[in-house]
Image (cartoon, rainbow, N blue to C red; front, side):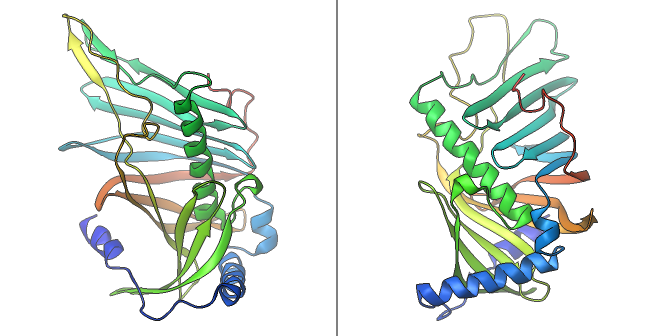
Length: 291
């Protein structure tokens, strides 16, 4: 994990590689065409309207590393839900779901096997109609756009993401073409494409550091209210976040990454390992209900 982390940080934009905006658009279109061809072709990629990813997650929580089960379900153009089942201590299991369904924010959590007498306090969803909910919806739409770009090299139409050529990056392990992504509101990211095989290598962006807050007490007064869901609190620290993609496998004719490492503020924070990825699954009605 440490070698991968250092490899990510070693990327630097090559000096003098920026070009005029008009030419950048043409270059970006050429690179996207080559990248989509590399993962299966325009037709095969365009046919993917839904993904069901399931596997495991390893996460750093303070000075500990915890693990659990992870699911990410996406139905384009506007539905995505991530489910985590994490054991932060002993037999305690914290189950959370967060995502978006159109204009509806999806947030739910529960605990299983809590120790006798213990009180588990999870962050509460933002109040309907509040500024916090508006920000959470914006964050969730951005999360959907980033996931769609990393997996399928496309973004939901509602995100209005534009791709422009940003230059070339290099590391001791190779070189990459870099695309700038800009969309609705303040959406911005950089996508790194491997120059040798044109597959997506990494996506970077500025965002709020994800937080997981689990408070436990035995007796005594209840703890003070915790802030909103991870990433939904405007006062939280904004940092550099990187997603590194590897372990590509063919699923219904499309090459999809089955391992994603997330670096937050220069430190490895999470690793996702997908055991299965299904293309265009028949989702159950409750999948995006938030219940």
